[in-house]
Length: 448
Ligand code: FA5
Ligand code: MG
Image (cartoon, rainbow, N blue to C red; front, side):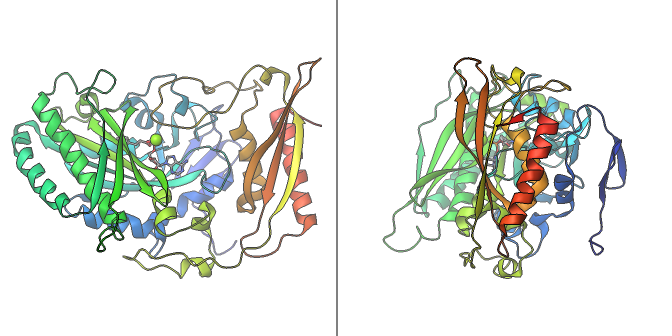
């Protein structure tokens, strides 16, 4: 490990990140396996798929200022409050987010930088960064991924220029073999903002849709551009985000499936007011780079983005979307683990999807130290902390409720695989035992 410069450090009392020391408190829940990721910056690594896509999006929006935040640490205020997230939003819970302490956290989305970027007086910008969410373990979920935020805002007195801009974008889209499926309507569930002139709100929404449709065609339209090919299908769906209205999610039809690419909408006036630009209006989007890369480069496992194996890293070239050539995979090795849940977890504590859109409460809100409720994300975190990237997936394979005592048990299958060599049964047993020991100690569960 000597060659590795460690700019992050966790001691029992504090985290040291980018030269700053943050005291720990009952919120602190970041394992060192996650802190290690803070220096990696895959979105800036030349010829890495994540960086290749960032660059293509930046080239597409060539007049927008590219931004890269200096640290993944943001205040809870920036990540949630400034953007109008209600106090009981599930995304705030300790089971879903990584907290430095009750004031600071690792950003869960690039929208955390919206206000500070508007404050800089920028009207058109793109921002790319690593984001952190506690999550389940499988081939498409990893606790760190990358997002790109893009926004375009105008001085209200300039909004009359939008119809001409939109006409130009429409002309260009006509040359693309794209089929846009959009049945969204403006309604009470997805309204324009009351202070907006309807015509202006409509033009901003159009500009948002045209801009993103043309980006998606740039990324996915290669095949559809060939003679006689089927059109590229893009679908617009009504969505909800606390900091935009109207709001949408955009999906693309790829290899026979609809794939969610991004969330977007017209920026809430409250956010712009907070940024000191009340005289402006416009749109914002947030795009997930891993999901995009996995389908465009045919990368089958999200852990591959983090490998240092040259067989992966030397395959790609900046500016080019090429198909991943799989190299030999070593065999997996799975072990099952059955345990009784702690008594207080018997009633509820089912897992939920981590979504920034949903407004429903249901997560465990901070701080509830000392209370033992079972949450799958806590379990997965310990597994990942012990096994690192050797763990490929954690799957619930059985649930049982004792008919007399009403005690509940679960059985998980832990699937281990090394990316670069064979794992021995002894090695895997050793990992499994460490996981067992830690979950018993830290989660109050009892092995069956
Ligand atoms: C957001 O994060 C909003 N900040 C997006 C936004 C920005 C809305 C600006 C409005 C205006 P969401 O949680 O849906 O929303 O994530 C946005 C995108 O990130 C998703 O569409 C998806 O592409 C990607 N994403 C979300 N969760 C994951 C995950 N666990 N793994 C990989 N990609 C993910
Ligand atoms: Mg979403």
